[in-house]
Image 1 (spheres, one colour):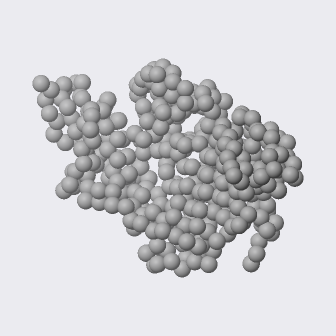
Image 2 (cartoon, one colour; image 1 turned 30 degrees about the horizontal axis):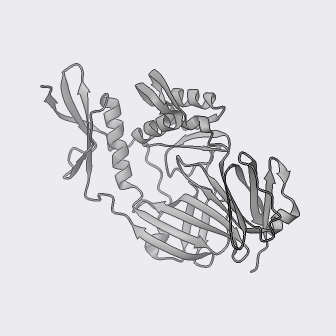
Length: 356
């Protein structure tokens, strides 16, 4: 069925005129998962040289959809790159998410003492006029003491989230801290489940990533001030093949968290699927859950999560979506996410080494 796409663009809240809209060669929105800003790329036909050069700093807002299915807000972006090339002459405008403020990447120095992850995140959110969205289990994690020395707020949060098996992102005016692949939206509600069949899908590429599959135990060390010993904690005492994390962690809590987070990373993201959809799904965002139907049984049985979504329009192809999906081998729909309070895989202390 032939579907008619809809594209709506504004510049500083003013709709682009018909002449500009008629010159669109291609438009791409890239919805990135963590750390990186979402991106917009717009290429216009300037064969007659009548297009004015846009200014950097202009805010572009984009909506995509179909006449028969409505339109979806794709976010706001600030123009940071302009390229004019030829022949034939074209004008390419690139912009990054308006939520990823420059101040988030500016270095600063500060110490946080006896703070939870939620406390630190709240301070940073307020500093950059963002609304914090963090799950309760992550908010109460005791960070203890941490120093921020000529380090950006975004880097500090990324470092802390990596330590505790979480992820950070900024979308729609919110600072998001969440457990990856939990399929939760910026509002804290479950994301809509989408089914992709062989009919609605198109080209695809599947791969299995062996992330040290033989590793069944992760060890991390810390210095015990009371005994003056270097103590090692591990995730699975009975494990046959251990991976030892480099460095010495501040205390048992951070060492345990680091070991557990690394164990989860090793177990996760083992299956990857890149799929070009026959029709666009502009409402699909990163972290959204996906079901496959009509592919190989092994793929259909996995619980897939969107790691990256690229929504594109061109005169030749119309509106399309490319999805980069990830899944943990053996994790099927209907399985409940592991609860850290009831997870039987608890880090245990093993023999330490006396400090020389």
